[in-house]
Amino acid sequence: MKHKLIKNFISKEELELGTHYYHLSHKKNNNEFDPENNNCDGIFYSDTFSETLLMKKLKFMEKETSLKLFPTYSFTRFYTYNSELKKHVDRPSCEISVSIMWDSDGTKWPLYIDGSPVEMERGDGVIYSGCDYAHWREPFEGDFHVQTFLHYVNANGVNKEYKYDKRSFNNNPEILWK
Image (cartoon, rainbow, N blue to C red; front, side, top):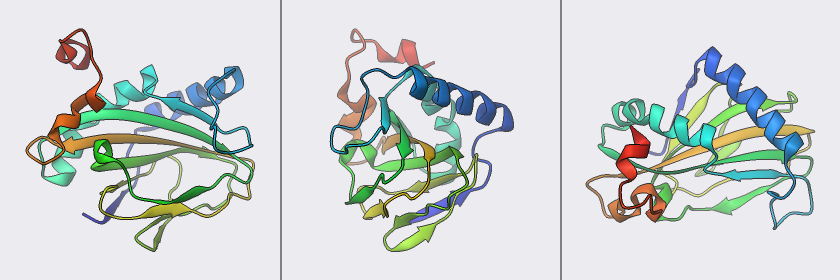
């Protein structure tokens, strides 16, 4: 699958809660910043809220992709002025991904997947094969933009060993993911 835009990927209640959560997380952030950029982009690897969403959306993602999936990890970025997502393909833990748009100052900022621009509105998500298709964003000219990425692997595919992003959960991760 190259990409598939899902309008209202998250519910209005999830959108309201997540938007407030990430604005507050960014304001309270003391040490989780993008080390590659000299800006104030807050980065949050597998925070509790997005990990919960990773599991809540698992069945929906399986339905949309027609695949049995294993969750790997979540990642949220609070982009600021002049942020850039350089052109890249993802590591094996990101075989099937969905990028969810929480909030923005209103500045249009498309995600390019294999050269095709994808415009999202608050609450939308785009499902794509991050390992197969290069994706990027041009430098951001607005004030803020909040995006969460949920990542999965095909449970019957070549990347299945990346289940849970190879994280250890005391040898019993399933108890945390129910």
